[in-house]
Length: 351
Image 1 (spheres, rainbow, N blue to C red):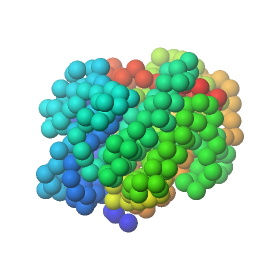
Image 2 (image 1 turned 180 degrees about the vertical axis):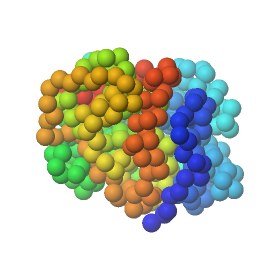
Image 3 (image 1 turned 120 degrees about the horizontal axis):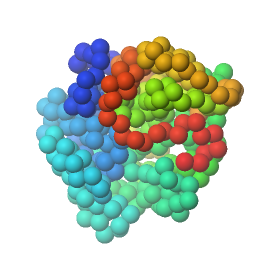
Image 4 (image 1 turned 135 degrees about the vertical axis):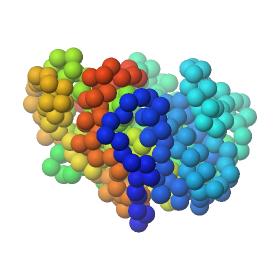
C-alpha cells in the first residue's frame, strides 16, 4: 500500500481560481511513484472536460517531481480557446481533434500511456445515438489505435445502479445494473475496453468515478448554491459519495501502477456515505441561511465503496468537512462556477 501524504498544506480557504487549480494539480507520492514507474509519453484523450485540465497538469507535475522527462499531450475539440492556452502555459502540448473522426484519431501521436476521458453524459437524453457512439463505439476505435499502450479509462459509478444505503456502497465485484441509456452506454464502454484488453493484451484500469467535487462544480456546490439562493432541497436522492477532485486526479494517475489484462476495475469515491440533508444544514449554518426541504430520502442511491482504491493509493487528503467550508465560502463570495450541475437528484438515469 502506498502512503499518500499532502505535499502542499491544505489551506483554510481557497481565494482564487489559480490557487484552486494549483491545489487540484498537486500530485501525491502515489501519483509521483506511478509517473516514475511507467516509461514514455502520456496522451490525454478528452482533456477539456471538468477534470481533464488539472489531471493533465498533475501528470506533468508528477513526472517533473519524479525527474522523468515526458511529453504530456491533451486532445480535445477545444471549443474554449482559453482552456487550450492555459494548458499550454503549464507545459501541456495540445492537439485539436474530433476523436470520432477516424482519420483524425489515426493522426494522433503514438504514446505508451493513454488516459481516456472522452464521453458524453449531459444532453444524452434526446441524443442517444451520439451518446452510444461516444461512450461505446469510440473506445473500440481508441483500443485499435493504441493497442500497444497502457490505458487508464474513465467510467462511472452509474453502471452499478441504485444500491441500498445500508449496504455501504457498491464494490467492484458487484454485478452492474445500469439504469437509463447513459449508464447502459457506459457499461458498453467498459465492455469494449475489456474485450480489447483481452483480445489485444492491452493492460488497463477502468476508473468508476462517483462523484468528484471542487469549488466550481460538484454535488456539494449544487446543494450550497441552492441553499444560498433560498431554493428548496429535494431529498429523494438523499445520499451520495463525494471525493475532492485533486484526490480523484491522484488516484487516477496511481492506477497506471496497477494496469492489467483483463482490466482492473477501481472505484474512485469518497469514504463516507454523505446525507444531502446534513450537507444542506451545514451549508445553512455556514451561510447563515434557512434551509427548506421537500420529499423524503429513498432507501437507495448511487453509492460506491472506495476501499480498494485506498489500499492501492492511500486515503483522500481533503476531508468532507473541509470541502464543505471551502465551498460555502466560495459560493458566498461569488466565486466562479462552471455552470454544470451534476443532476445527482436524477433517479431515472436520464441526463
